[in-house]
Image (cartoon, rainbow, N blue to C red; front, side, top):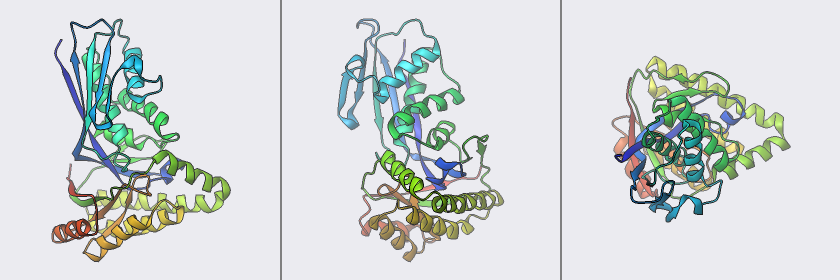
Length: 315
């Protein structure tokens, strides 16, 4: 039985974070410059059913039965065995690595789940459909993040830009003109579960105000969808700025993220906003070909831990 490897990209949310949890649409795109990888190696000399987990990025080395029942990796392995109908579990070692920054809003947990689900189901000889991969990854997201929107597992599984709204059919976006983004990692970690829970408490305390903010964010996502399809990405900049203002009102930005947004705009970005859960993680800046280097350099000088450029190509 040969080793089986699978990878999955990171992701960024262009528009709609947090509001998407409350039924409004959001737009997300894969980021292929960073990836999670899962490798499953057979261990023919080991006892049948013995699964060893290696995840050096988080300092984990253990057999599966040493992990708590709700540990994400153990949960994935057991759910894949269950849904695939495998009658036996060959001894193996699972190694999980990732170049996606943790707790940064780039979908690291969902990417690990997707890569692991694909690698392990392939190892069992029972590869799963994209739909089932996404569904299983969403189950893991609920364990880790409480009430996730479902957008991370969706865009990472299908690895295409998506217009996503809970309860509606996924729309794979047609990109008619390339979009260039500079992504700046603040180096500050932030728990998505905590920020989502804080927004929930705010909504429970003043539902009318939050619903209005979510409506405005949803309208921005719809306008952005039309602009992307029409092939005029430069017009997205003002929408990004509007979205950032609303995210600040919701309470998920921070002084550091606000400072990076201001730096990007002062350096020639067409628009900029936080991406993901907020409080820490990343900001994204829409740039032209002429401004890319200026914006990236300015964000590095401003203290961003990592800065890189991604292009969302026409498809």
